[in-house]
Image (tube, rainbow, N blue to C red; front, side):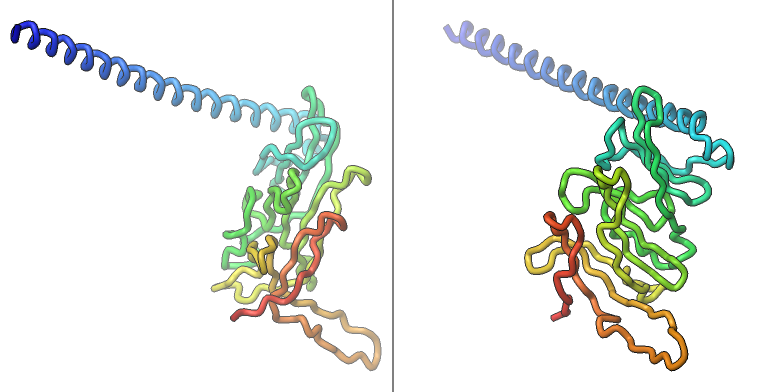
Length: 253
């Protein structure tokens, strides 16, 4: 009787071992399949990017005429109709946004671009969310939560430094500024960055170190500094106005 019990127990143990071995083998196969699938996806993405770059090189007359290189390329979702949206930066520090469908360029838009290293030793882009566009002062992503991408930019226009968030306007069929906010770099070597995406009083947005310079007028001109200069102000998205509006000063407690 005991012999039968021992044999039965041995049989059960063998079945358990076989079951564990089978599950481990299946798990190994699944992990291998997953890795192979990821490699295929990465390869497909690379092939797609290379094909889009070739399409632009072959068909964009401006790119061909000026013999420009594409130093950055990424797919985005800017709300442009007529094809997939792609954004590039050229070797001449230009940003172009395309709508591409069936291997044809339907539309192209261009925006300004500035080289980060020329503007500040401290990396003022390091905490800006979204996808950073090469070594520029721009980034793109869905900053306002409306489901489409916008383009954030530190703009350096001579004496005028401005924070600009560009968004695509379907009716105007063009990119428009959702805000233009004057700023200055506090310390180009040690920081901090003049913009921080954060929450203020339960509202998501960003704060800016505000600084507005004035252009001298005619005879008798008296410089009157903006009382907001040198202070942090918070800005949030207004979905009705479709722009970033000033919420108020951020006072450190």
